[in-house]
Image (cartoon, rainbow, N blue to C red):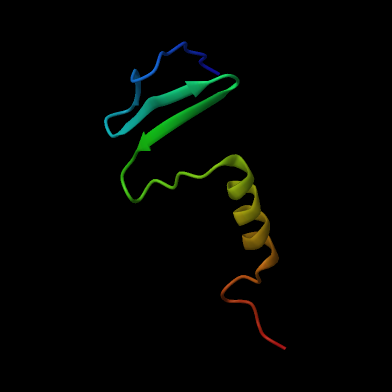
Length: 66
């Protein structure tokens, strides 16, 4: 894991098309803005985990139905 220190309004660039901007810092909370192409999913960890659980619970599209 790469760990970086950034101040408000500073950016981190990932590849050629993802930009993370530090929008605000208040106490122990940091607000970030993320610019990414539409084909790149961007989710909070708990949302990504829920999506994975939901996908795992779904039968494969070619599974026989009873």
